[in-house]
Length: 261
Image 1: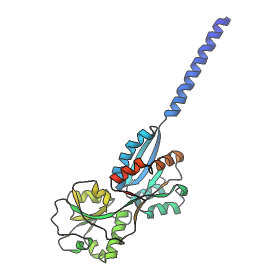
Image 2 (image 1 turned 180 degrees about the vertical axis):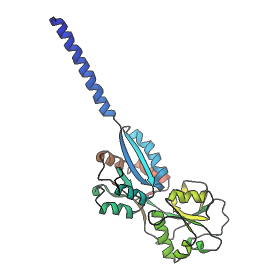
Image 3 (image 1 turned 90 degrees about the vertical axis):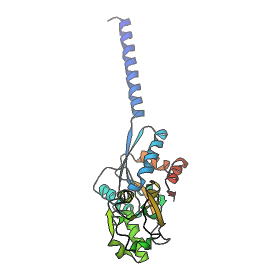
Image 4 (image 1 turned 45 degrees about the vertical axis):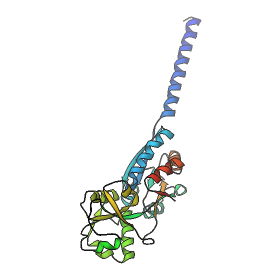
């Protein structure tokens, strides 16, 4: 092989190497990272909109949500289900994970505040205007979150205990596995009324708000968020948590009825 052919071959190999390296670098730059987010069911609508907006912030991130009751999500994480971020509708579930060393403590913070309301189907003719009215004979079925694992159910029991009517309400209670189940039962008229978050009531035109929970009748409804210690995407998870405190995200939260802590 003469010198000219050797030089031509060397140049060809060099071009191929540069092209391959460039393609690999581009591939690495655009490689999509999936963040697994376990979040309270009451955040379904707002987080789906935030996910759409976040695509413009970082197109290399795919947000995958698991929505459910905070208690069920807590149990899944404790059993080893993969998750990068946990957003609970109450402190109880987050504290349980913290005590078991399953979250990154420095990442934990209170993200949002919500309210508890009593609602009925939109066309209801019941003469109830307060939580105390749930003891009336005309009220036969009351939809509540299951108190052992659903935060809205726990807040509801605090309210009824404060008002001294818990036992009488329990006789009429129908328990849902998460707050969205409770909301659906009320929307469809399967129950006379129920207790949900204000943000759930705002998400539909099929219910009407009868009353807000009396002040001081329950713990403040806060939504803590934290990164799971077993996450393989801690840095990217923190970037997303930082975004949730930006003006853009706050405006979306406010639109759905949430308040920032």
